[in-house]
Image (cartoon, rainbow, N blue to C red; front, top):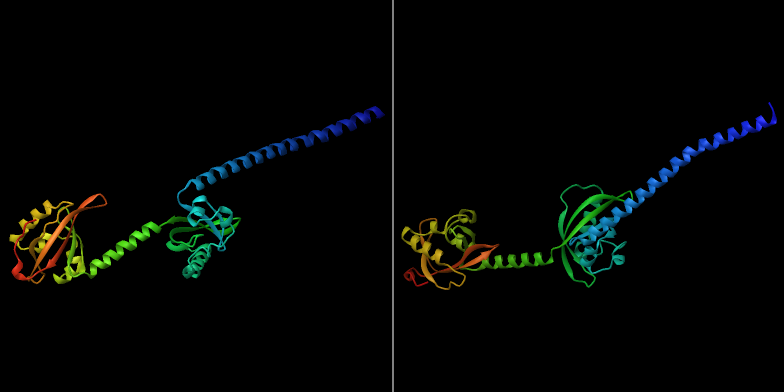
Length: 285
């Protein structure tokens, strides 16, 4: 073989090697392009998620080993902190001191895989040291390849204050000696206080849902029915009637009632005060 032929064969061999490497290079370039596309997609999805999370009215936070590793804007506003003040801080410390140990134990259980219902209301302290009642729903997730907790936070302070006020008023109604009850427009009992059902000799569930007319004599029922229909938001008249007890005895009362609206539905709220038997007569509305 001549020197020229040897050189030609060598060049063909080199070109063959280059050509053989060319295909993997093209595949590698395609893979890099795909990875860049995936990276762009992930960044776009992250931007969408962040925008969605920050647009929520409810707070969102990720807690891991007791520390807050991420929180949305609503959660930060809820506690009065900036994002950089909340992230990497202790979620336990934000709780009211009386509840920190209990909250720490609850978070540990959830992160460990506790699947029991996890909705609770916890008292937390804001940056200005104001106590807020925060409703939270927590669920186990993974963050950075490790178990963590995704928490949805709802400020229940106003609702809790209203519930506390209603509870206090209900307790007051249970303590008063007067009979207090609420009826729907058909006269069915929706609420009756303890003083009334005890005085009439009934248990609470024996009176709830029954018509108030069931506790009047036949001759009183028609007049009471008319008064219920005449009730208005400004009713102020007092009338005399009597309630029939479970044992058949009668309790004369001086009663008054007015129309109120609860949840968009009309009800009659009434109060009756026991009187002497000699006072049993009808008076103007």
